Image (cartoon, rainbow, N blue to C red; front, side, top):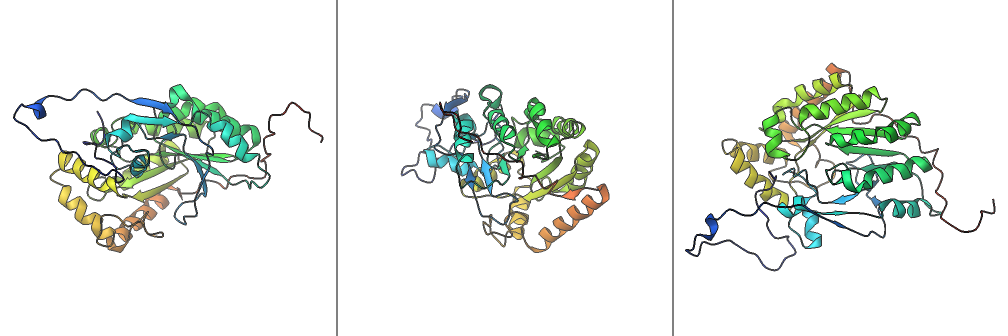
Length: 349
């Protein structure tokens, strides 16, 4: 099962294709199953920098391009258009991994002018999506950061994060890491339709418990909040996060940039036709009359009375369950020691 229902051309393509029935019944023939392909991508650098006031980091690394989890709402989908692929099904099936990511990271950290600030993993596509089992790019990055004492934060909806519990506990013992587990819904059926290849809600909460028991600072990311579809679960998700051992929680309102808008509304009409008009109307009320609002300051949580009500409900739920809002701990940057470049000569000092 996949998330997107179609494979529209990217916005940079000069041609568009539409399937038409020519009388031979071609449209009635079942399509072959989609296979996932994974190709290496050589990167000259891996650290991406941003100056957005809406996120609590200014450095991030994305080990993978595309994501097999297939979350239909993923705001990273439009990036596939930059490599002449579709933000639809191509995004879920044509993946790229940065095979030399750890080496490139080492080079960037060793630069004389580098200033240590926490690096975030999982801000675009999931660093623990299924292909990580084989390619281990995320693990190689964590190993590099542990070796030089560099702080790192992680956002994922995968239980594969538990594979690296050895590294995470070592980083946590030095106040160098925090982990957020994304929990979008507690309903298995909604999860299967909306995030078809991601872990179940129960498995994600179990991962929160494992991380907490191991001493790793862990929070829950309730994102995206979709009005009239999963927003009624807010209090239950925050309570479940607290019971599992999370220290904090945060939420993000559904964002529909570029091609994601049409993909999401196509999916919504197919799976929840009785709610489609209501979801769109409520979302527009929270986005100033538009389907999406990219402006800094309001794009994460929306505006208007419905957005204010959502924020108030979330604040009450946090207080009731003793959780902090978003930030877990302030990670330590003082332990960072630049990696030494490989050289046949011994260092002078």
